[in-house]
Length: 506
Image (cartoon, rainbow, N blue to C red; front, side, top):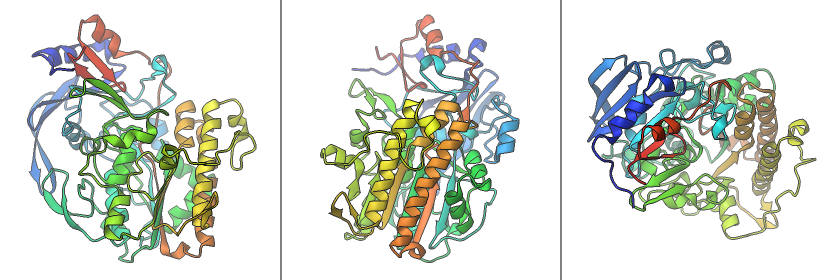
């Protein structure tokens, strides 16, 4: 059973992490000092902030600062646009920005399983010696936090590409507003009562994107791990015509949608579908340590994906659950999605029941796949199979039948495409393999759009495209592991998911 860290353990670990020798790989260290006081520390400065209630959210006051504030720049426009990103690869903390940084830091420690320290790695840091990739994420630096967001179709204003940002936690309340769900009694970001569409709602409805009409159906596409600068550029160049079609129909956030910390898969899949930060919905990372249970929790692995939602907090609702509460006759769909609580059709529920899924036996010859990457790369091959099968599920259900089972038209359809994450990791966001994954995924999006059109409901349907986090190109020359320095200094710790440090637990 783990115990609370001893006095001085946190300070000693911070001292090691901020050693100049680790500056190439350690960007910022965050911790909760006590109560509603939080601290961000870097070799060239630190800031301590206090959180207070403000409406249904929080306000932050700087209580103490030494040297430079690591989170001084919280702008959302930094490195927006592909040219801007390419011109300043691997920015250090003096050139980077950290949107919503104080909120990002504070929400994490609302979870009883939060770490003692959270370490942000630098944009340049390559995890190759820990099994990492050329493309990386996890930090709240703007490129790693920035996901795409395109909203289009019934009930959506066609505003083009405004130079602004939102947050991923804004997606769920906006979708529910589109579907006609009225606000009721709920809990806000700060835990106080508020008018909300979900039982706990950290995000806000993007009211100015909506035209007041109700959408009868919503179809959401998640292109996992996709850098929006690259996606928008691919659409502009004609390499992603179906995403471009949706962009032309509606509104695209030019600065993207900011993922919650940690900018990792399960934390933000769940955040998108619940409107809650990881520190509130309970799935705080792909892996963490639970002191109360005295054991490691892993959610993002083939062995645990199907059961990962056991960690979802009971007071948190998904879009599926809200729609059923609002209209018990609603039919909703979650394809290849771990956060599937309340969905009537779920790929992972089919797997839990060991139902027949008709999964393709081999990756070769699958439509809409770039064979020159399928053949040499096992992950590209595997996720080509997964995403093709997800497309078949979506088009089948919208066509009325999948594997011999008849289905009604869904009010809400969620399709998780994973190939992009694999490819962006493999080659980095600016690689040929990343572009190929966008083209392949876009073609599958097109098949689903055609199925919606064939149903005769296209004009009654809203669509959105999103990702769970951004992706940033790392520098293969910048490797290393802060765990080595912590062990050498005699610090007693666990490092979960590379950056969640739990002290005095061994």
